[in-house]
Length: 432
Image 1: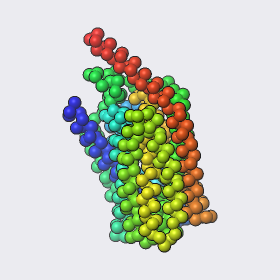
Image 2: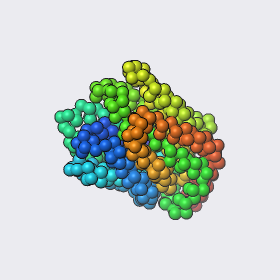
Image 3: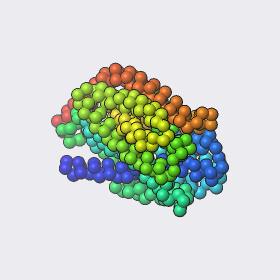
Image 4: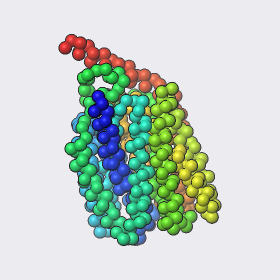
């Protein structure tokens, strides 16, 4: 058992490296936006379409990845996803014109929908009361990858150009595909559930179409799906347009952008772990605990973002402090949403369940960069960022409140199912 506990942290370390470098590659498009627009001579709406294209491809493929993960070996599929990341990034760097850049950038969305299998595999290494913290650790990779991309773009774009930077990140994806293929082992589905704790062997349940369809009978999950539709709008607007907002409307230089965003992103990273830790802590007290933490995050984040953008242009220090405060709260929901999905679904359809969640999130958010681009043309960056973020966060908080009301029943349903499965396995082992 000790070796198993050590090995599961090795798996977390490999997946942390995968997600960190993948997020860096994916989010590089933000700090490189103005350079790419100048290179291809395109406007904000056309650049928004580039970002939306990858999101649309990723959204479409989420259900397919989810099914494959629940049906086949997750670790090998994750190695394939890493290989696709590297290959498509290389193709994107080679694009000679806007049309080919638009198509190849869209192809990078293929591997963007691969995370549900990763989270599902991790759920079979860690018990429910630890998952929020582990997911929070893994989700540190989004802001840290963002910062890595920011530093890479800011410091080296003049010397290397944006194409060579993409070549570097694509190559790292190819290397990681080999590490995952040979280094990460598959875990038995459901092994970490508390009901299975004292069982030497458990029955492995595979993807079942009817069980997957029954996901749509869980009321709390359905509301969480609806929340997901609006919940990711702000992330995509901020990711793709906040750098341009600082440059064009707050008149920051590249050095000022780096000095402002670096501490904010570090605080953002801590927010993921804090959110997962708080969610686990409150979940031990009440099965609504994770959803409560998510609600606090989106409500507080909306309020703080408004006051941050309202800070006068000359008050750069105050703006940085307010931005850091905002960044602490807005990631609180993310690890708790993932953990909540797994708190109410059986192990053999968890990749499918989270894939549906992400499909709905990206279906709604795929249009966010393009929609923001249109608003920018008419009303400016600040109006686009505030209008989209605040409206969708308020709606998300309402849906999370409904989820909190419904979720105890669905959690108890899952625990009853796992107790029945454990009892069957004990009887089989007693007979042997």
